[in-house]
Image (tube, rainbow, N blue to C red; front, side):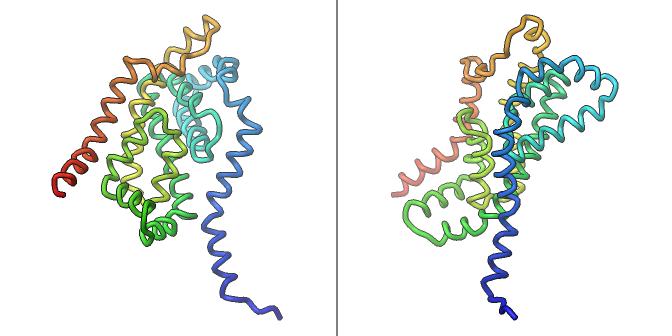
Length: 246
């Protein structure tokens, strides 16, 4: 008979913990290869009448189906998150479309956060805590300013959404704090894109494509940067007080 070593159960346990994030990574790769041509503005344009008809006949089912698809797109890092947000506005107007978008994005983000935390986060955070040098200082800096850092990575338009989902998991951010900061932090950007989606009817009639770069226009970007500065204020105050104490 083959003897079972102590390492085998540990290896199996490690694989089981990492299986969810492995499946997400595989799904993301397959989605990029096979779905990027389907989760597109062109697809939305070609199916807009059928989608509106389905919404009018089955509103509650349409909401639940839309949110389920949006959650899957975010949780598995599939292409088309921006199109999904536009679709929420197109089908359900700026409100309640923005609420549906924010809720679905938060659920999907929490799913990938939990998968990453289960697979790597807790052990990596423990190693960072036990380490020294630059890595330890980075971990300590995030721990001391978690709320501010979490809001900043959500508010800054240049931070990819999946990065903002993974980084908190790898530094052992509490789930409740992650959910709250995600829900509130993505509201500004979601409202902007949902409102763009709400005006897609006129865009379709003109045969044009929506301006997804609108979030970088001054009248939109400056208020968001103001929120970023507000979120960063506690970090700046701590740094100033730290210098004064030297």
